[in-house]
Image (tube, one colour):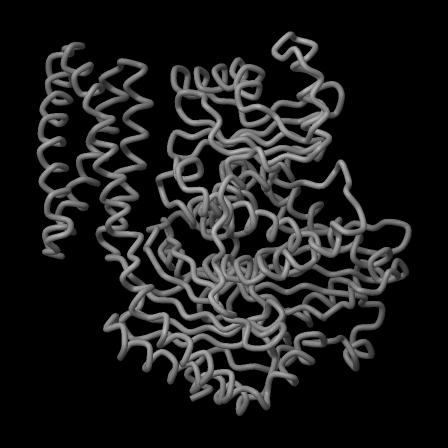
Length: 622
């Protein structure tokens, strides 16, 4: 039984995704409670029934959050059923299932990240825009599939395709030509071109002024590329079985009410809001074209269409407006004042950005925004200075109009169809050019992706070593031997052990344990996380993260950069850019001794650059 629900601030459900078992259970419960007179055996649940059944728990959660600032994040029931909660921009995301709470919290945080990429701060698009809701559903399905099948999505890191420098250079020059041609046609200076081979990173070329892409952005691209592949897999599965455990969005859900075909030939396009490399997400609008130039080889052309300053200001304004709405409920000046100051700063940043752009399209919205905020600002200051409750009520009553203006600005700045219209013909030509130039290499790329790196002769140097995963958490690049998960023997023996090892390590990492060794009846396991300075000298944390790690996000980068925040917690007086972080997971045969495991991990960490066999800097390829 599994379900994802999203509620707005008035407790109306705006998005649902559930399996048949959950639908059957809720419909039986509705009949038992007299909410419906009919016995509904279909896989559909009326949104009214969902609201009536879940309103008490949702209301309780909101009261705990708004009035006491102490909301619960999960509930565990006697029958093994668990619920997890997460808020984003005033909307409550609820996951219900029989998995362990940690897994459900991760799933929920990833869902919030996906919604942020596709809706930005305006979550109500899940209800108002059927096309976006449909894409959100597909990307969630893509994450579930890859999280269960791919090491890179499980540990949330990027795997580089290991090829020689000549091939890398050829691919990079082809991408550079693609960027130059696209820039010339669309007259937009900020463009990226990226190639992925079987979810592995082959190459990226970015124009000089383009906003840097983060590792999280690239993981999101991998999810998008797999959306179409997953549809093919699910179509084959649907003909064979119709399981009650299948987690999907039924036709009654808002998601499937109207689905628009996105494909144009072999090219798909999406309008998304990328996070960029800054620590706090900016939600910078981009148009993405994805073309499968050959099976398993995906070309992505990414065009930045928004203004980073306006995007950042808009996101901050939405965020702090939600914070002040929560603070208003408590009617406490001490709580409201910092929330007001943050909102005032965010709006100043937004209006400064709008002034600099001087776009006539934004002019009316800019004037409305300034006028509405001047009125609200005056009322908030009256309340703060004189504790006048009438002034606060007037500010509250103006909030909905102010929110509508912000949503209008988001639509004007983030979703620009003119770029799509201007670039479609050119993109087809560029795709054909890249396809032609890489045609002779594609088969090799695909073969290499299947056997990117194997232990091979290194087994002699590391006797007893079965598998390892090395992650540079500064760049979020992973080096690990390729395993063939199509073999049932590998799945039963090795894959389950790897997945279990990573879950076990992360649970202990959240408790502040940076080094672990343990064993079962078959294997020895080891996990190490350590820090170095820029010269490679080991650093010992000045504050041990036993308590600090509990306030951090889930380990990984899709739910927020855990490792960046861990560095800040462990080294409060050092700049995070001067601290490097690394992870190493190892599996050895059960006969290996602890001293042998320690020696192997030290040697692996010291010589991993030899195993990778590819340059650290793209400039080396040119």
